[in-house]
Image (cartoon, rainbow, N blue to C red; front, side, top):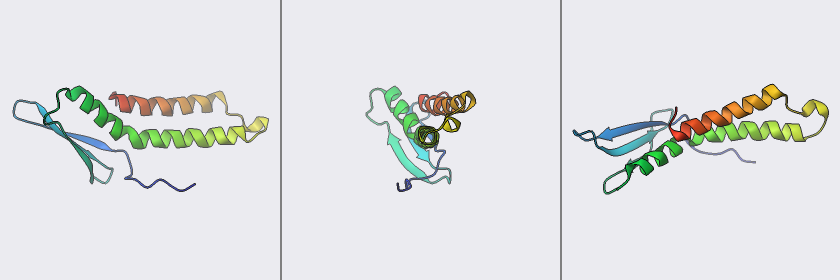
Length: 109
């Protein structure tokens, strides 16, 4: 399986508002500070959806990393043998990683 090629995370979001505090643009940047994309809110009726979309995009590397770790652990566990079965602590760690990624996408982090 080939390695994914995208800007390393975590990705950060920068908001740009006018003098009245109305959001008009968001920029997402990689860990290196380089811009990944810009979201323009001009003509957008409901910025809540656009903001949620930006959070989801920004959380993509975190979700990708969590899924890769979970996949690797479950593959190992499914390879057979009682010793390969994940412990409760390992399952909780996988759950924590997935929950962190989802919280980030939902805007809690």
